[in-house]
Amino acid sequence: QKEVEQNSGPLSVPEGAIASLNCTYSDRGSQSFFWYRQYSGKSPELIMSIYSNGDKEDGRFTAQLNKASQYVSLLIRDSQPSDSATYLCAWGGFKTIFGAGTRLFVKA
Amino acid sequence: DADVTQTPRNRITKTGKRIMLECSQTKGHDRMYWYRQDPGLGLRLIYYSFDVKDINKGEISDGYSVSRQAQAKFSLSLESAIPNQTALYFCATSTLGNEQFFGPGTRLTVL
Image 1: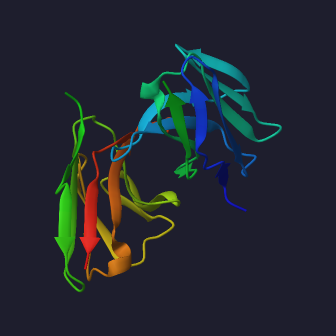
Image 2 (image 1 turned 120 degrees about the horizontal axis):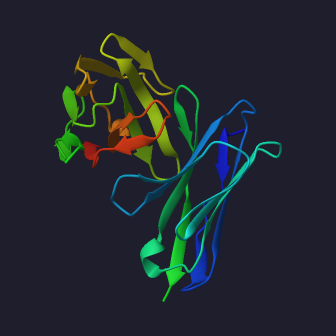
């Protein structure tokens, strides 16, 4: 079983819609969770970190963590074409484990 | 601006050649990492270092070595490059909370 599982996509949503990205992880001891955005040919960029159960909001982004279900998600409200990228889920202990990423396309 | 830089940005080399990829950072972080990224496989950790005297193997360290010359510098070497080491290589630093900051990447092609 992979340590971090993500649907590779592509996930396609219309402009203005909510994009929902999901991730499951295998280590029940994980304490730190992250979402990174990676544009094609560019390096990953941290967009959200979450450490406790529940929701964390930052602008149009909301991260949701459920440690009992070993599940973390990212919601992007009012999706824009500029949000089209690959989104990497990661959890961090003394080193960070990344998922393979979900490709998101936002159609204008 | 505080930043993570990598040199070279692109490199084409031949099988058997020794290659060094360099990384420098001005973020003041103690923790530094080398990853490789292959299509469909995500980021895989090659080596990581929590300070100048600390070097640790990641999940795919075979065929690679590293040197931490200073807090700000972390180099990755391929002693004898082979074609399956063709990939995109990223250097990163992190805070104590494990938030990672990536360099722009080096695209390496081994012929």
